[in-house]
Amino acid sequence: MAVTPPPASEIAIVLVAAGKGVRAGGPIPKQYAPLLGRPLLAHTIKALSALKAPIQPVIGPGDAALFETVLAALPADLRTLCRTPVIGGDTRQASVLKGLEALSGAPPNIVLIHDGARCHPAADLLARAVEAARAHGAAIPGLTVSDTIKQIDTQGFVAQTPERATLRAVQTPQSFTYSLILTAHLNAAERKIENLTDDGAVAEWAGHKVHLFPGDANNLKVTEASDFAKMERLMSADLTDIRTGQGYDVHAFGPGDHVWLGGVKIPHTAALIGHSDADVLLHALTDAILGALADGDIGSHFPPSDPQWKGAASDQFLRYAVSLVGKRGGKIAHLDGTLICEAPKVGPHREAIRVRIAEICDLPLHRVAIKATTSEGLGFTGRREGIAAMALATLRLPE
Ligand code: MG
Image (cartoon, rainbow, N blue to C red):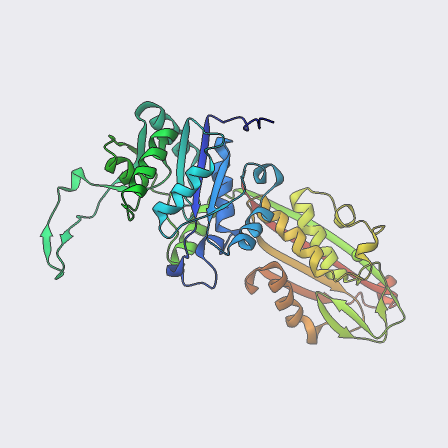
C-alpha cells in the first residue's frame, strides 16, 4: 500500500542545538540551562513560533531527556510545532545536514537554519529571512562591525587589515531554498568538506551567490555564562505587564505532632488537617501566583476530590504554579507571605522557610519575604483552632 507523505509546508525551520556548550561552564549544555525560569531553548522555540512553521530540532546524542524538559516548559500549541528531534553529527555542518534530511519526507520550499543559542530572534528578523530566501535563494543576516578587524598570522602578528566597511558579523537564521541548501550540504559532505561554520559558507562553497540582509543587534548568541545575565536583562525589558495576585488559606488543627509550613516540617503539639500535607503557606503562595496569572485557583488545578493529591507534599503545587509563569514567558518579581497563628512559634523557622520557598520557586532569596504574626488571641487563630496564611505574588509578564 502506498504511503501518503505528510503535506509539505511552505516554510520549515532547522533548529541546531546539538552543541556541548562547554564554554558556558555549566553542568549541562548551555541550550538547556535556565533563563528566566525555563530552558534557553524553550525561549528560542517560543520566538521561532512566530512563523507558525514546523521546527526540526537537531540535538546531541544523550540529550533526549533534556529536550523533554524544553517541551515541558512550552505551552501545548508550541509543542505541536516541534517535530521529533534528530541526533546531530560530529560538526555543526553534519548536524545541519541531519536536520535538512529529516525534512525530506515533506520538503518545504524555504528552510531557515537557526542556532538554538540565539534565543531572541525578533519576528521581523524572521520575516526578513523568509523574504530574502524567496528573493535570492540563499540569504544570511549580517551586522556592520564597529571594531576594526585584523587578520593575524600563526605567530600572532597582523597579516592584513580588511576594509571595515566591507565586513559583516553574521548571525542566524540563515535562509535558503530547501533544495538548494540540501544539495549544497550533500555535495560538501560527499567531497569531505567538513568544517564550514555556517550554512552561508556551504552555499558559497557550492557556487551560489549569498545575499546579506540586515541582522538584529539583540539577536545575541548566548555563549558565555555572562551572556545569560545580559540576555535576561534584555528580555526582562519586554516584561511590561506587571501583575499582583493574592492568596489566602486556612487549615484547622487536629491530632498530630508536626505541621508543614512553607515546605518546612515543624514539631508541634498538633497537626494541620487537609487533603494534602495542609501546608497553608504554600497553598496561599500557589493561589497568589495563579491569581496574578488569572488562571483559576489551587483547587481547580489540583481538585481535592482527586485521590492522587491525598497527603501530597505541597511544594509540587507551588512548583507547578511557577512553571505556568515560565510557560507564559514571565518571571516572578516578588513573593510575600504572612503566617497568622499563636503557635507554633514561627520566628525560629522563618529564615529556613524563606530559603525553602526560594529553592522551590528557583528564586534568589531577596525576592522572597516571609512574615509571621499572632492575632492577639482574637478569632479562630487566637483560639489556636488553626493557622491562616496570606500571600502576594508580583509577576512580570510579556504584554
Ligand atoms: Mg489549603
